[in-house]
Each structure stands twice: as C-alpha cells, then as structure tokens.
Image 1 (cartoon, rainbow, N blue to C red):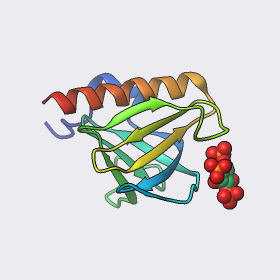
Image 2: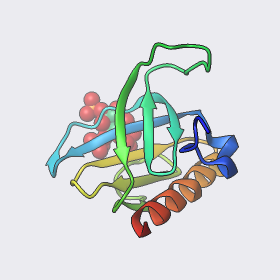
Image 3: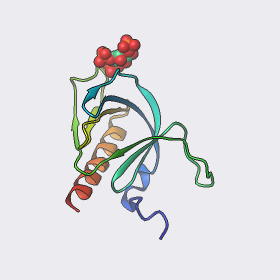
Image 4: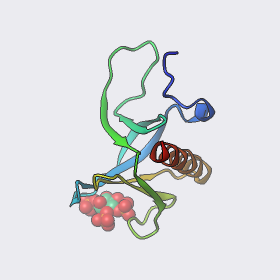
Length: 123
Ligand code: I3S
C-alpha cells in the first residue's frame, strides 16, 4: 500500500525533532552547524525536514536525504561536547552527527537507524 517504505515497527519514529549537523560531505570536512531538523526514518533513508510535516500537507521542505544502505552508525564522545551524540557515515563519505538531550530518545533513534542500516545493507 501507500507508505510501504515507512517501517511499521517504528511508528514512534515517524517524525521527531533532533539536533543534526553534517560534518563531512563526500569526504570533505564541513563547518559544524547544529540545526534542529524534523527527522523521519524509512526502511533505507533518513529524511531531514526544516519543519514538521503534516500528513495533509502536499508541500515538502526536505533538506537532506541520508541513504542508509552501506552506512555506518556509531556513538561518539569525541566529535562533540554534547551528550547522546551518534554519527552516521554514509557509503559516499558524508558524516552526520545526531543529538538530543533525552538519552532514551537518542537510544531509540540509534537502534531504529541501525536496524534500517542493517536491513537495507543486507538486501
Ligand atoms: O567541534 P567544534 O568546532 O568544537 O564545534 C562547535 C562549533 O561548531 C561551535 O560553533 P562555532 O564554530 O561558531 O564556534 C558550536 O557553537 C558548538 O556547538 C560546537 O560544539 P559542540 O560541542 O556543541 O558540538
């Protein structure tokens, strides 16, 4: 059906505000610039929107798509002074840091993204 790519078990993760910064693009270091993004996880992509998306809304403000096939995800305490920071490295050499002050929220996203990485990388 429609929306089949949105993981049903991750209902609680359809969208949430997370702090995000892209620190590398195609292997080239970027200036760190933390931004609050409305983040949506699908089976093989992490989508970042400037604003929360409403299901009725046709307009989209998607600003970045992170392809999770072949990506790496790891917790890091070295790349930021913030707490609960994890890094996603894509197979094209882009690096993102994601963070939220709530430990359980960060853990929930880490686990779900890792599952998407694993399942999209295997298939
Ligand atoms: O890794 P850095 O350079 O210490 O990251 C900090 C900077 O991005 C800083 O901005 P300026 O470069 O304009 O000073 C940010 O305000 C900080 O939040 C960054 O450090 P954290 O530890 O928050 O990731």
